[in-house]
Image (cartoon, rainbow, N blue to C red):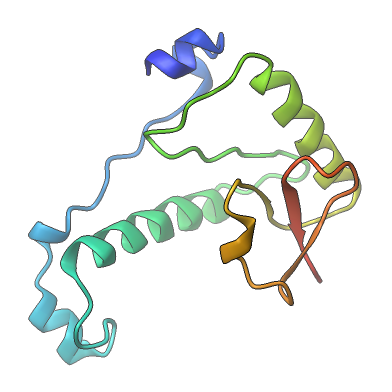
Amino acid sequence: RAELKRASIGEGDYHRIPAILGTHLDMHALHLSGFVARGQHANSVGCAWSHFVVWAGIARRAVESRSVLVLEDDAILKPGFVEKASAMLRRCEAMQYDICSITWYRHLTQPHCIRPLPGGDGAHGDVH
């Protein structure tokens, strides 16, 4: 919250979503259901499930031409972040991407799924 405040993002401009804790999951039942492969760590499953819940919530409330920015709880926002992120999101909207990922770990992303947006500043859009 301190990072959001420092970036001049007000309380009414964001919604914090609680994480799903892996320690609260019944891993045995999830494995038996086929939802989780054997050997997956509960914390990893909780993290992935948390991300799924966020994206599912966005999809349920999708409104034409409304962008949503998802940040991890440990994100550090540099000065000028809001302006730069807003410009990237406008470019994504103009290119009619369904998903635009702003990330520093581009080397972990499957290259056949995405392509960089013009400008070379870390934004990617899905290829459709």
